[in-house]
Amino acid sequence: MKSNSPLRRAATVLAGALIGLGGAAVVTAPAGAHASAVSGKAVCDTATGTRTVTWTLTNDYPTDATVADLATTPTPAEQATEGNLVIPKSAHGRDGELTVTQQVTGDAREATISFRSIWSADGYVDEHNSARVDLAEPCAPAETPCVEAGEATFHHTFGVTDQGSTATVALDEGVKLCEGEPVTLVSYFSPTPQFSVPQYEFDHATGTITNEQRSVTLEVSVPDCHTQVDLFFGGEKDVISEITENGPRYGDRKLGGDSGPGARSKGPEGWFNGGEKGCQAPVVEPLPQCDGTIALNLSNNGEISRYAVAFTVSAAGFRKAVTIDAGKGETVTVPAGAGTVTVTAEGMADATYAWQRPEDCELPTVIVENDCETVAITVENPAGVTPVTANVTYGDESETMTVAAGKSEKVSFEASKATYAAIDFPGLDVEPIKATLERLECENGGGGGGKADEPTLPLTGPVAGSIAGGAALLLLIGGALFVVARRRKITFTA
Image 1 (cartoon, rainbow, N blue to C red):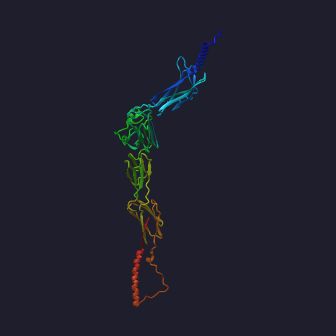
Image 2: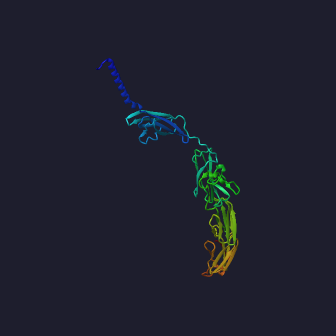
Image 3: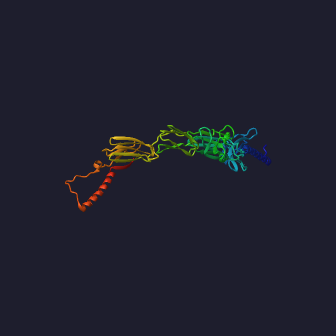
């Protein structure tokens, strides 16, 4: 028998409600267990001043969760390009974990992350996953301790050409200087292409290597002769202007050495000796003189002249050695008639000279005198010149004479019908002289009166006396003119 009492109906309703609530809890329980979380931690690398932020993503559900829409600031995560990221499932009572990192430099104040978690097994999505890490604490590279002068290490290049010398010196990586390190490149005149003294400074350049300017490039000119070039640790005050026998040296301060301060820089040997010619400037200027000697002006005063030069002058029966200091000169006179002169000196080709008469030398003078019996020719040679040879020709006759300087010589010929005399000087670059003689009336006492057509009588009386007196005066004058006319003197200059 069924009972439909109010109490039973109430009990039935209550039981149905309990069953319904229990079913709802079973359906929603899995959804309530899905959860992901994220936390971050930043670590500073003091060597580089870079922070590494590590994000840890967790999954508390027993199936894998896919990460979607991952975003990090201020820099992207290093794993952002690796495709789908998955947070492993939880197991054995521990949440699954995925690690994501990002590198942060500069003065960023925070780092952030956000993403979504998706469980593909049941399609559940966790939309709210985000976190931030405070970056307020400073992160800078640790201060590198500096090294004192003499302890720093370097590397360098060094080279010398005809155009000059160039060197570059650089501080090694990771080395910090407590103070600047000066380095200098210097070139010298040298007496030989090997090391020798004395040496004289030609050019130099100095630079200082600092933490801000970690390398310097130095350039200097080199002389066009024997030279030495040095690269050394030191500044302007350390440059040696003249390297002498017992004077200071750069020694082991030269870069590239095996020991000492210079060994702190790795590279080629920082020194050079060479050059193809001497640092002298020998010059010879020959000046032939009118007296036949040759004055040789020897000089050693060119731009590269730094050392004495030894000249040797030689000729027939003559030899002389002369040493000329730098910037000086001297004259050597070779006697007349010594023939070809040869001059030798280091730094120049042998030079030879032969005497030639200068164009401005005074020429000899020729004096020609003639009367009705004789033609006399005198050659006068000025003082301070070489002896002169004269060939004198008159008619069919010739005479040769040599006239010393400051002297005269005379040659005479019997007067003939020849109207001129020729004087030639074969040693002089002059035209022969043709001395024309004036014709003299030498026959019949020099008279030249004509013959009258008819004889005349002598005049008498006073008039005749006057005429006779006048005739006597004219006779005296005529006699004097006859004497003068019988002898002519003409002077010629060659």
